[in-house]
Amino acid sequence: MQLLSSSSLVLRRRFCCLATPSFSAPTPPSTKKKLVFLGSPSVSAAVLETLLDASSVSGSLFEVAAIVTQPPSGRDRGRKVMPSPVAQHALDRGFPAHLIFTPVKATEEAFLSDFSALEPELCITAAYGNILPTKFLKIPSLGTVNIHPSLLPLYRGAAPVQRALQPSTNPNFDPEDGVKETGVSLAFTVRALDAGPIIACEKMEIDDNIKAPELLDLLFACGSKLLLQELPSIFDGSASTKAEAQDDSKATLAPKISQEESWLSFDQEALTLHNKVRAFAGWPGTRARILVIDEKSDKCSELELKVITSRVYHGNDVQSSGDDEVTFRKGSLIIPCGQHTALEILEVQLPGKKVVNAAAFWNGLRGQKLKKLRL
Image (cartoon, rainbow, N blue to C red; front, side):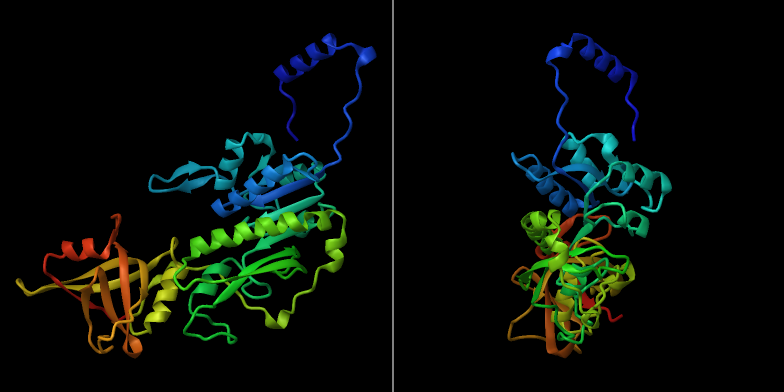
C-alpha cells in the first residue's frame, strides 16, 4: 500500500493538536462491503460508472475499494501512451490514483500482495482482458463475478458478441446466418474459461442490422442492471447457493478475432457477408478488393477498401453470381454475391481516408467502372 507523504503527516499532526481529546470519538468502521472492479475498454467504463453511482447512494451495501485495469498503452494514430478507458474514467471521477492498479499480468507478486492487503470481499470483472490466477481468485472472500456478454455456456471466450453476429459455426444454428438471440450472464469466475456457475442471465433479441460495438454497449448496460439486482444475494452468500453449473456439452467457443479473418469473399451469400460486416465493425473491420477499370485509357487497378455499413439487397434485378460488375443504385453500391444474392454497401473507407457514403465514393470514380475480385 502507498505510504503517506510528509505533507499528509504534517496535516495529520496539526489536526491532532487542534482537536479536543475529551470530546473526540473514534470513527466507526465502515460496514460497507469492499468491492474491487476489474475492466479495461469503454464498455467496462460504463459498468464502472454504474457501480460508482450506486456505491454513493445513501444506504449502499458496498464501496468501490480499488480498480484493476490494463496498463497505459499507445492508441490512435499518434500512438500516444494513454490510460485505459476505465482508468481515465476513474481519474475523471476523482477516484484515488493510488487505488488504480495496472499490472501487466495479474500473476505479479507485488500486485497480488497489494491487492491482498486491501482485504477485498468481492471482485467484479467486465472485459478486463487478463487471465486471473488461482492466487488472485482465492483472495476475495465472496469470490469474483464476471459480466459476460453471451448466454453461457454459448460463446465462451474473448469475442462472444462478434462470434454471435458472424456466420455461426455452432451446429445448433443456421451456418449461413448469425443468431437471432443473445444475452448477458453473471457467473462466478473459475480457472476454466468462462465456465463458472451462473448466477443470473438476461436474454436479448438481435436486430438484423445492429453492429457489434452497439450490441456490446447494450449487453453491458443490461449486465450492469442485472449485477445491481443480484448484488444483495451475492453479499449475503445466497447467490453461491442458487448459482447453476453450466452444461459443458452445450458450450461453444468465441476465440479472439484476427485481422486475417477480415477479408470478404463475394462468392459467399450476401447474408453471410452482411453478418460479417456487422460482427467485425470497429475492429478489425471488413476488407474487400475491387477492380477499378478506366475504359478511356484501357487500364485497370486493384483497390482495397473497408466495408463499413451494408445490408442485403432485396431488389428483383439481382445479377447472376457469375457477373462481376459492381453497380450503383439509389445511393448504394450493389455487389453480386453467391447463390444469386447481392450485397448493398452504404459506407466505405479507403486506406488512410475518412469514412464516406457510397454516393461520395462513386462520384470520386469519375466514370470508371468497378468489378469485384474473387479471393
